[in-house]
Each structure stands twice: as structure tokens, then as C-alpha cells.
Image (cartoon, rainbow, N blue to C red; front, side, top):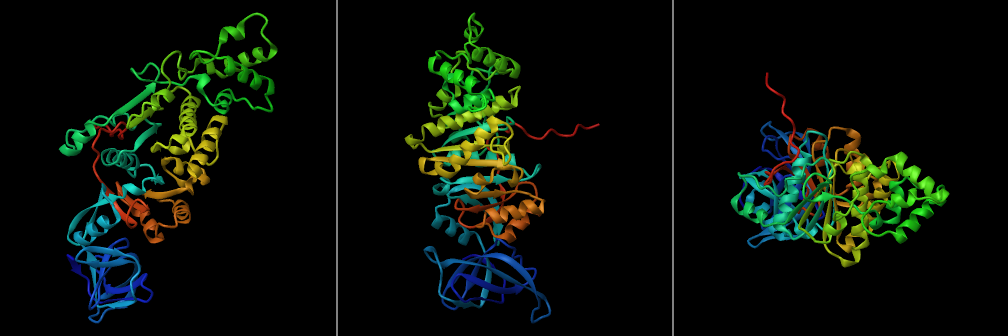
Length: 467
């Protein structure tokens, strides 16, 4: 295998963990793949931690590298699994060949990032077969989180057949169909053939983002009016009665509520709607085709621009309607990736109001049971503590960008036990675009730099004006 000699020795007592001593300054860092050579074989391992170990034989400082054994290297690639105990007389930083061999063995084919190895740069690739897990992308403001999410979505569109529904709270992905002029020509041609549908609030284009009240789940319909089935029994019953009789796409039959002889319950319901301003929401279909019907068209990517609604409750209502619809049709078992940027607005650890509470409850259900039906989540946010813990704990893939808060990093290490703590700690010093990828969708936990976007950004930072 092509690699740079690091020297000294390594010991493995159980075939699973190794300890190597090497001169300081040879370039090994936590996360590196290394080749450990014995007299008869080469072992591939990954370094998780480093510590100083006094002076070497010539007085130069040495370090102790500890990590996991991944398997044996040979002419045919890598054979994964524990080895026999061994003592290695040579430790090498792995190069491109060993890295590619590991990716080929594990079926990692989706290029999303790059990392430096002993002989240059190598692509970091995801395993498409492990995207049927929930994924959590986290990074503080300015870390490149939204850009990274765009890279993930683009590469998944090109390299898989997954259907995506993107709940876009800041209009960051509304140009997902617009290929950049500097994109790789082959990838550009592939993206141009992909069916991307963008829906915006009513009045903002040909594809209005609207819902039809009679189509809403009863819980969503009541939450929109802040109705409690026990506290507001009479009004709740009136809503149920209306839904049984409703025809067409009007949000409510106002003439019926205003007609002479209306009941006290109808009068109270009308007052509630008027006082809450629900009747003035632009989210109501008013005869237009609702988002739930458009989802059934199965576009490869459906981007829902939630940023243009005047009221926060409107975007929550759309999110809830979409989640309820996907859950109601779960028995169809159609692979669907539900992407939620700024996910804490929909799936809060401390829901505020009945709509957010209902949306969070549905996401908890999808996180716990959706995988077997082909409903997978990709959630992006700035802090793990903002996401409901019952959703966070169900995520088996992690993309961690710069995160300075010690408590946030401690929570990441606690929840995502498959991410080595030494690599999680490095996130405090990440630069723009650096990311730790860990979990089933990568061969091994990897610190890398995200690749380039293929489509236009919808919400890039506003530059400071020059004087």
C-alpha cells in the first residue's frame, strides 16, 4: 500500500484495539487511517486518540496513538474484522489506495467531502445502503451547515433514487433545480434531468404552497384553532361536524357560521376564528391544489418554501399536514427522505403551542417507527439540545460541524456513542466547512471538508458593504 513511513512499533493484544508509538511530527492525527505492518501481514487501523510519551531514542518527542483495528490489507483489498493479536514493527499513515480499498469494501460510493491522506487528497464517500437511517446534521451559525446540507442533498439526488421532501424554513434550497455554471459537466447533466418541484406560499408563483382544511388530520385541524377536545368540547364537536359535511377547498364555511339561527357553538367557533386571524391565513387552498396532492405525484425532490408565510402557525400547519400525510400513507412503503432545515422550529425539545406540539409528536413517531416504512429523517439545527430527545436518540448518522459549546459537545458524545469522543472534541476547532461524519453511512468516523455545491444557494450570507 502507498503510505508514508512513521516508524517505531505497534502492539495489539486482542485483535481489536492497538497502541502504537511514533515520533512526533510525522503527521498522525486522531481520525487518521494507519497501516500496521508485521513480518507477514498488513493491518488497517484507525487512530482515535494521541498522547505524549517522553523522548524517543534520538531525543525526539514521541506520541502514543491508540485506536481500532479495522481488518487485514491484501492484494484484493481489505478484509474487515478482528485479527489475531500482533506486534507490528512499522506504522504508516494510510494513503489513497488503502482509503479507497476500505470504501470499496463497505460500498461507500457517494462523494460528499475530501480529506488529506499521506499521498494527497481523497474523496470521502457515503454508503447509500445506510441512508435508510435517520441523520442528524449539527453546527453553530457560520460553520457552513446549510451549505453542507445542500451538498448532501445534491449528491443523494445524483447517486440514489430517494424521493425527498424538504421543509425549507429559510428559503435556502428553493434553487435546488438551478445547476451552477461551474459544476462538473457530468453531474450537471444528471441534475438537470431530475424532477425538482418548488412550492411557495400562495401568490408567490405558479405552485402555491397551500393546504385544504377538510383534508387535515383532526388533530391538526383542532390545533390550528387552538382547540382542546376536553376544555373546548362544544366547539371541537362543531369542527368534527363541519369536517363530516365539508365539500370543496374552502377553509371554513363562513356563511354557514354567519347564517341566522346559528347555534351558540357555531357562534363561539366563528368568534375564535376571527379573533385568532385564522380566516386570513394565506395557507388555505381556496380551490388551489393542496400540497398533500402534489406530494402524491412523487417528484424526486419537493421543496416547500416555508419562509414566506406571515404567521409562524402557517408554516407549522404545512409541516404538520405533510408529516401527517406521509404517515397516513406509510403502508405504501415508498422510500422518502424528510429533510427539515432549522429543525428545532418543527421538532422542539420544548414545544410552544398546539401546532408545534403536534408536529413534534408526529416526528417522534416517525423517528421511532418510520424506518420500517421507508420514512427517513434528515434533521439540521444549530444545537442538539433544541431537538426533542426522543427524535435525536433515534438518529444513527451524524454530521457534526463547528460547535464551540462544551455542553453541546458533551451531549453529542453522550447521544452518539458511535462517534469517538476525541473526534467530537475536535469540532470546537473546526474551520468553515469541516465536518465529522460518523455512523452507518460512512465506513469509519471521518473528519473531512465538505465538497462543492452543484446548485445555486438560496440563502447565502449577505456580505458587508464596502465603503
